[in-house]
Length: 226
Image (cartoon, rainbow, N blue to C red; front, side):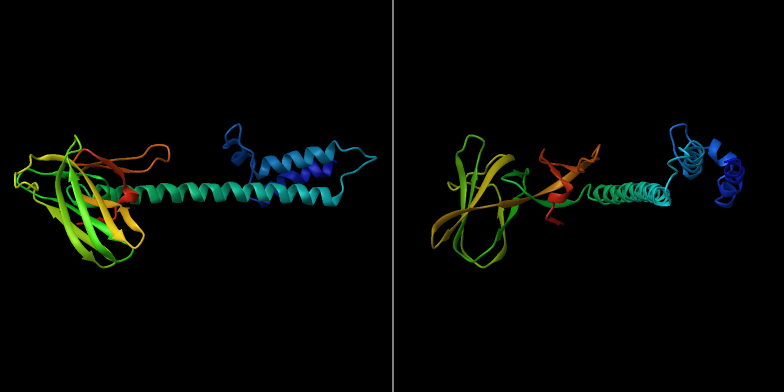
């Protein structure tokens, strides 16, 4: 097998994998040159009575090529993931100071302002009602919006209660219900809030937005940006 050993250098040279390239690899890294060296060692030490079949040699080469291909594919996906996360972080940071619409049953009434939100109707409603309650569960205002068509229905509350008293600024609970042929149906509400800051996810976790009303939401849950 001396000729096989002597040909190893020329084979590695033809592949651009000389001794210098081997030394540059990490101790636990197996490249093409190391694989060929193992193959040569296997040929040198095979049982003369049971020589290695050509099919076995080809199968090992195919397995090595498959592993190498998967490794490169994984590296490509890792690079793509980093790029996508960086792009998502850039988009999220641009939301600071802007107002977003997110699914929530809690809204904030600012001092001298209004609490705004949206109800997304999957079908027309004969009567849409928005109920606003304080932390103790007391009803502050019922907004009777009447018949509504399919789509987004916007609502605003200026803080005036059903009894005509101005409510204090703060957080309030919001619920929506509609009348259908089968009875009363609860609906999801979306509220608008300003974005104070952005928290970057670690270890594959989602990017979160820290809202002015104290809530935190995933970037993916944002329905609209104002």
